Length: 76
Image 1 (cartoon, rainbow, N blue to C red):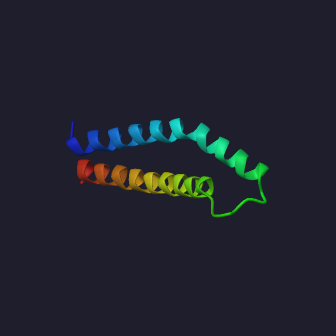
Image 2: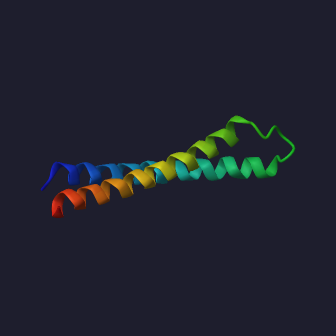
């Protein structure tokens, strides 16, 4: 099999497991933020949730680009 396909599969699987492992911590941070609404909106917990959402979005976009690229190089 092509090396690009293995890189794509590895990137997707590793990223998926990392996001799943961090999910519970982000849920706890969100519960803390919603319970303490009067706290500073620029807290570390708020920033960590924003960065987690941003990184999940970037991971998804890069994964889709790698899949398209690997199919293009395989069938092209």
